[in-house]
Amino acid sequence: MGEKLGRGIATVINMFNPELIILGGSLSLTGDTILLPIKSAINKYSLSIVNNDTQLKLSKLGERAGVMGACLLVRDKLLSLV
Image 1 (cartoon, one colour):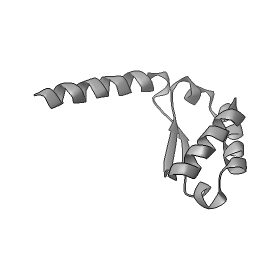
Image 2 (cartoon, one colour):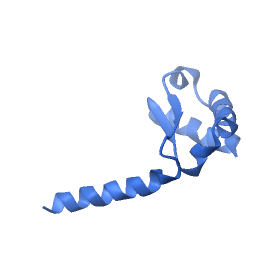
Image 3 (cartoon, rainbow, N blue to C red):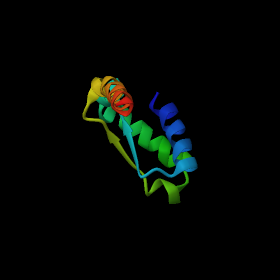
Image 4 (cartoon, rainbow, N blue to C red):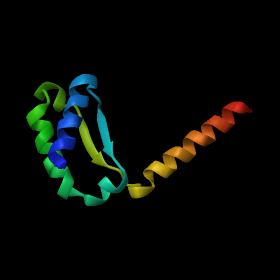
């Protein structure tokens, strides 16, 4: 699974050159178990020039990341109506 995720993230890195990628949800609870294969695949499938600028971090919110993001979207939508 880490290899496949890393390959997908490498594609995103090659296309958009982000400075930071944050992995959240239950994926962030696995720690280095999933992070090491992802980093290995990123190094293998992304351009090294682009890859060096991107940081990969695990979210500190854990499984609450999706719920908190949804709540923030609702809050922003409600505040824009006022």
